[in-house]
Length: 207
Length: 119
Image 1 (cartoon, helix red, strand yellow):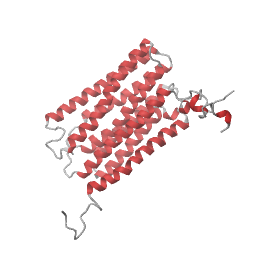
Image 2 (cartoon, rainbow over the protein chains, first blue to last red):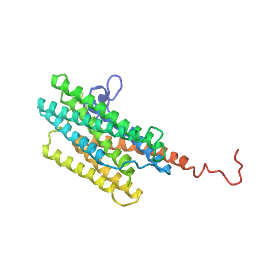
Image 3 (cartoon, one colour):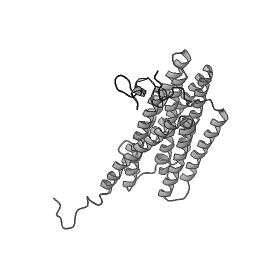
Image 4 (cartoon, rainbow over the protein chains, first blue to last red):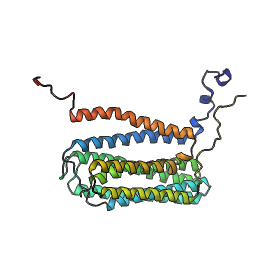
């Protein structure tokens, strides 16, 4: 590195010129770092769940129907597509279209959350709590509610973010980049669900 | 005059691909998700079922990452950063998990040695 590449303080030039790493907007970089950290969190939850499942001789298989989880999966995947269309509209300066697709995405998230809560209530009505259930080891309830609850928390946060960013985007306070960052978060929530469904639901089907 | 070594206006993901492309990716992911449900009802043992489901989930996640999240359209350096850094973090976590598994099954070191009286 030549002397010309250093600033007066002796730092490499890239750190002081205001150009973000990889010359990617700071908000996008921040959400990607958050996504990486959150991926580690969910990976930890799923791996711990795997150890518990392997270690317990009487692991319950309480799911008799896949209708609800299939519908939830369809809604969440479709909401990812609508989010994509919203960001695309924003990037092509179609403000009304971007707002419409963002709200449709949020409605998808709300539907998903309602179906999730309905499923929880049905399991609770069958006698499942955090530490007890009528089918086998009590660890199942703890791991199920923790993993799906953490995901539901992400969905709820995503819906709030979509509504807030969408409204502010329409009002002119936020721009297409803000919508893009929110979209990245929403796709990540969808991505996590792709792992939760097979491991938490489909491997525990009552055949 | 100073010239930064990273150009600020390199192309990044533009999100302006044809809608048809997004719909094709969406249908692919939907098909893979459906395939997982088919695997769940197939008569194979648990380990094989887990392996197949993991493989399909990774394929779904890869499509979502690359095309829904536009990682494929980002700069190659950034793509490498995300993939390598995430991979490193997740693999590094496995260092701890294997030890946890050893403790869980209690083998081999936590087994009582022959002839040693336990207090």
